[in-house]
Image (tube, rainbow, N blue to C red; front, side, top):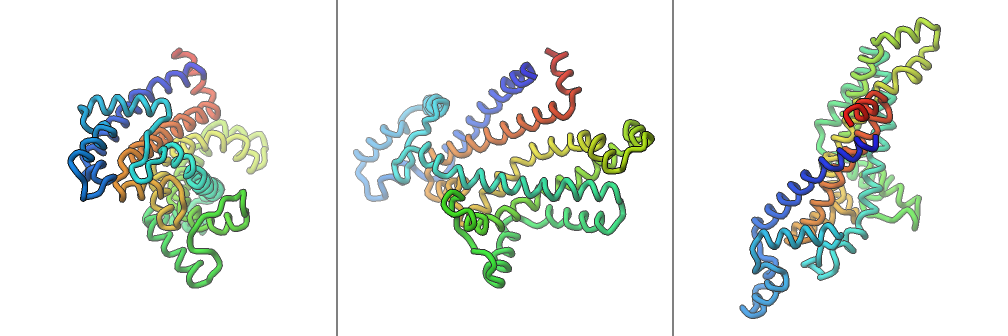
Length: 319
């Protein structure tokens, strides 16, 4: 497993380099001048030249990229064009709400998708199976921003059961934090739940027809013991893979929902930075979010190896 992990880390390096090149290149071709954003329209040529030299805009693009990438490796993303504060400080102050929202969304998705997918597979064609199919299709079809607005209208504006937006850290007031995070977390979980639910159903249906499951039944084991003790572990393998692949959708949903529900996370920060044309902050955030997706996929692969010993042995044999 150690060799497999090392191999995956080595493969991640060129991917991160390519992502950094794309991020740097796309930001450079966007309209707007960082120097003009800092100084305003009424500025002398001397001051414009001075700030351009300070930001390194007068150097060739390859040199600018190497300088940015070298500092990024050390965790130094430079200063924000908006407030001239370290970008790393701004990111660190916005990480906690994003992590909480993503974790809650994934947790809700797993709590709903796994048992409902199992029941749908064990009772195909039943009312629960049909209802789960309808809900899964609805979860995939309805965009996050639309569902979020509907929930605000229903539970905040009409029923007045939940606050419409905002964020309070759980360390300050856990009850208020839960009330504020319910709607965005449920909204974020809908798409993931729909995908995981269908894959869980298909996986359980496939596993239940395997010979080792038939053997377990022939031994006289109870139905729940057959499902939990023999079928579930193998049925979870595709779900783990899909969960890793869905991290990109989770991050995209976080960006939208943090804006709708006024959550001061990394998604809200990247939107504000784009609107202000704070290019260094956008570069840092896009790179970090891309690395987060890669790490999530790596963790999914490692979890796959824990659940399936054949993956560990196969990786050891290749080593």
